[in-house]
Image (tube, rainbow, N blue to C red):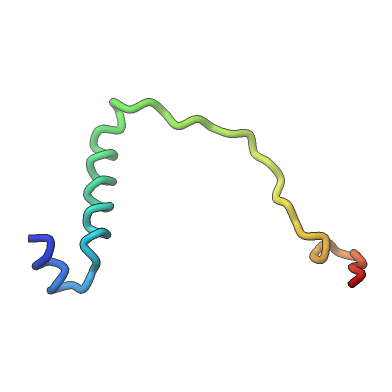
Length: 57
C-alpha cells in the first residue's frame, strides 16, 4: 500500500514511514521520559562577521 501511495503521490516511502513513527511517538508521548534540556549557549560568530573586525589574509 505504501508503494502504491508513493506511485500516486511521488512522495518517498521513507517520508511516510517517518511520519508514521512521529504519529506513534506523539500518541504515546505521555509514556516516554522527557528530553533533557541543555543550557543555552551563545552562538559562535566568525570573527570576520563581527562588526569592526579586521581580518588579515
